[in-house]
Length: 91
Image (cartoon, rainbow, N blue to C red; front, side, top):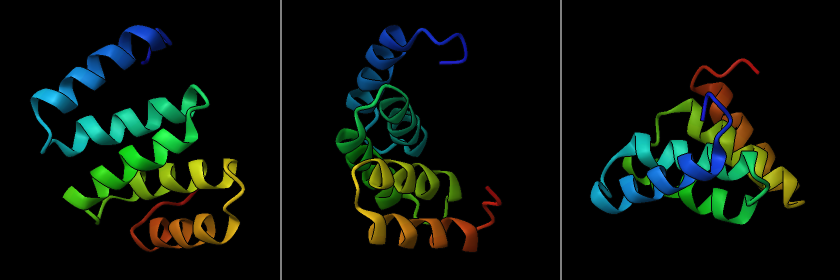
């Protein structure tokens, strides 16, 4: 992802979520990457999976808010942003 090789990263993260479905990091990173590639609906789903594993991670709430806002789901996005801020996100 850092090298912006999104197609390769996407394959690796999808594989990681299949091999370790209980990995917060795999789901959270997948959510981030899906947002980066404009696949916001799928990004929401991945963020939800991450948050089901650890609802106290601000980055997953932030990424969910970004996806929701892109989908025009403003009220939900604002609620997710508030949750992220309550957990320490300062963006």
